[in-house]
Length: 169
Image 1 (cartoon, rainbow, N blue to C red):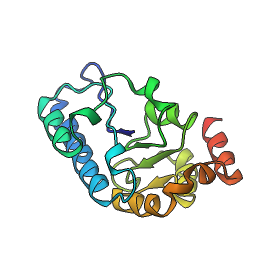
Image 2 (image 1 turned 180 degrees about the vertical axis):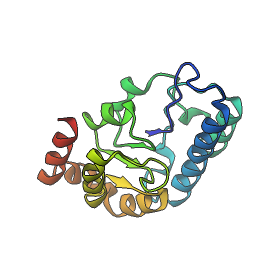
Image 3 (image 1 turned 120 degrees about the vertical axis):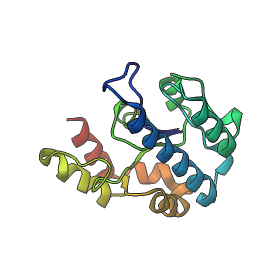
Image 4 (image 1 turned 45 degrees about the vertical axis):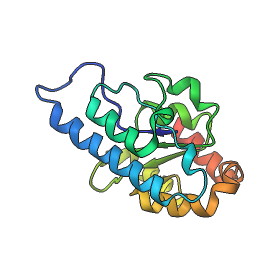
């Protein structure tokens, strides 16, 4: 399951269109790279929106994945347990929810897109060091192409379990 940037139900700024438009464009571009570069399970990529309200975004994602690979709005939680892994592009609620249940990866540039506060920089560094955080989709697909068949073994490594516990604490 791929989770793009979560839009809040109600606008949180006077003009939220620009911010969300850029994030929607990132989601679209990331999905194109994922679909192009992933060697295994290319047709098993599902986009799980919190709420698609922009028809242009839905049209673009449909062109990349196909209509059957876009899950219903707000169906993410019920679909996590059926997923081989989850990809999030922002450290948001969906990221933490899926981290508890299935292999979960964050594809987010923490130097430019999401700069963590000082108290959390060490955790993000550890996520990156242990291949749970990637700065771009190409790096993620390179990792996944090498590890896809053994993703559960990767996820069950002691160092990964310790890091996941540390995040949840």
